Image (tube, rainbow, N blue to C red; front, side, top):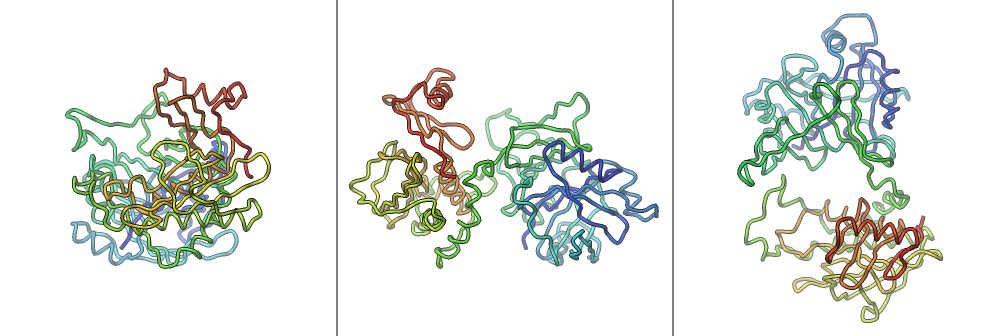
Amino acid sequence: MSARFDHLVIAVEDLDEAASRWGAAGLPASRGGAHPVGTENVLVRGPSPAYVELIAAGSGESNPWLDRVRSAPGPISWAIAVDDLDAARTALVAAGFDPDPPVPGSRRTPDGDLLEWRVCDVGSGPYDGALPFLIEWTAPMGPGPADGPVVEHVSLTPPDPEPLADLLLALGFVPSEHWPRRMFHSAQGPAISLLPVGTPTVGEPGASWFMSWEDGGDEPAVSLTLAVPGGELTGHPLDGVAVSTRPDRRRFAAAALLPAVDEAFARLRGDLADWPDPHPGGRRPAEDEYSRVTDPSRYRLLGVRADAWVDVLTSTGLGVAETVDPAAATWLGEHVLTPSRVTLVRGREGTQPVVVARCPSSEAAEAFVQVGVGEPTEVLDRQPDCGCDACDTGSADLLETVDTAFVLALSGGVYAVREGDQVVRRTLDGWGSSGRFARGEQAAWLAEAAEGRRTAGVVRGEAWL
């Protein structure tokens, strides 16, 4: 059985006005449809399954669902999606809960599609404010807009966090090592925090962590973090919810190639398997993991992901690839490995070539992939970090890191600035550096290079797209 955060339910009086408020904050909301019980909704969602449901009464009738929506504007409940509702109920009963029997639900979309699900309440009634309800989608929605917001994190302040912590643990959410009954992770959805999280169970004595929302009044009981394809970090109080947004890599044009990369990757990977994060919830590695490499050959999957990027660049006509003698390649940067295979992809004039190297480890051939730009080549990233079990973060995270390196390489601009043993490298969300710098000097170097006031030691190029 798998479980993830599905959606937050926010009661509003007028759907059109609520959609305008969220849209003005850069979070478009579109009509979802009507439920048989008389409620209607608009949805704030993107390509990932989790979403925000703005719900209102669609008729003047009275029933438990309509009455609950009318009586409590703001966040009233939330849903956990499970792939086996019967197994989830069994797990909750074993944990001491008394969930209702499953009942079917449905909604007709504006396009005429019928969405269907099974649902059961865990709390005392419809849209309970203390405990979520469970939903198993039997005829689910397809992905939302590719440029829509992605729910990344949900923070809740329940009346009593202990039963909610028991529920999440019973459903298989992974607890944080530092806050095992307050912060939870799921491989398929947003992270969930129960506030206040209090003092960590692991760490320096007296250490604590808290979140706050400054709006001049009481803190909202619910906060959301959503990733959006552009703009800056923002914060908005919306219908009783503290909503913050951050730009993700979709703001870069190269991210539009990711669906094609996924298709090429599925074709090229063969029987190479994914693997989970061996340290879920931030669990610290065991000491012996630092000297252990359980399966070095599985990291070949990362090189195949790089091959999928090369495949897309060449098949779309964006670049031309050639195999380069590894001995002839010159690499800049620290901890550069000796490659056994090097592919150089050239784009249009003005762009920096993208260089991909496959490197062996002492245990496996082509266990590492190294991505860089330019000739000589500035190393943007190398994965895995060292290959030991302690540094393994699971295939999903490592593959995303490979994607990030390619998006950065194809986005152009200043990649790095070098002077002696000092170097500043740009990242998608900032910069990294090595060497001794005065305060603020790294950002100043990148700004000077971008403006053309610094040219020596600068690696820069035009965007590929």
